[in-house]
Image (cartoon, rainbow, N blue to C red; front, side):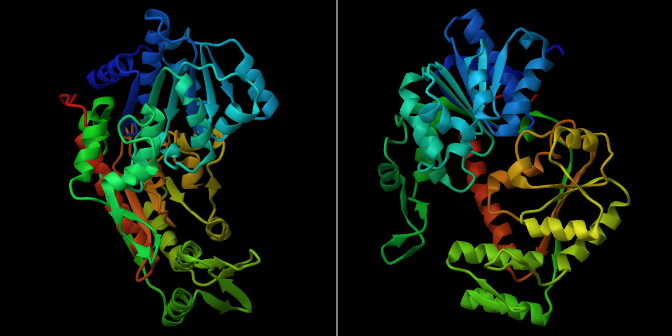
Length: 449
């Protein structure tokens, strides 16, 4: 296919070429992969400034999306690549193969740097989904930071740079510019821009920006950062967001409230125990969905409110394909026991969905959040269970709400009233507002095309 780039794509490619360090914050559907590959090709073969680039991406994106994009466009057809996923033997063979571009999944960054025994001689590193390096305590962050001084060019790609809060940005930009803009140490970043928010005595659970901190952070990173939203540059399909409320009975409400209050519950002869706040959050989300795991990993069913609502929504779809997002394994099991569904797990599943062969498809946000184009198969998404992660939430929605979708996209959220479901929805809206502020602050000033 001949590549006729939009003006924003040309702008983004030139930005990568002109900036040895760049953060490209692009919404889903804007073509960040072909934009970056076009820059890589020019840097390698026209300017001779790059010798050996490495792409780090989520496993499915590494295995499928980057190779597919190279094969799709005529101007990239001579770009050779080697994908290092799979077993250690397969990864090692791929990294030793002769190629222009090397691609590895993010889970194997630590192996590559610290265990493979292979030299880290890549002079350009592209991190697809930069937000997956937002934790400064993660092994992948620490491993990549060790070899960062060897890399001449760094590119960070993501549509969700601050999926939880502005605190996420420190680790991401520490990798990109080695601390030049937001500081070399997380403690310094916290002191300069944040103040403790939620705390218990000396234990601080969260931070909030100081007055004027957001603007100061945006200004610090603006010289190496551009951002764009799909709705500004592409003709996006109409989007309808809907909440479908369900209500617990008095007895179900009593069980929910008891676990929330006491953090322990005896149910059908089984013990439900929440050992800390994180565990309690998970247990309450499970109960809102209709079942909960015991300490032995058994599933105890509590209600079928969401299953009934899902049935109504599927009937309303009247045969049109529907995508259902679930979070807990017992959600999937209970849905499977009541409806005829198929999980989206393989390339064949994706192809069948896009050909309209799957009436009801199940996806888990953690495995289907990035890199899957599902817009050809349907336009309705139902959130059976919610996630606290704005990144996974937005990326999952973007599987259907993206360029190429020909129908109005409808996204339903089944919400159990008076439960933690409402807190999650509120948190996602707050996080989205913060992230939108960041993106707007560093948005590329281009005319809408």
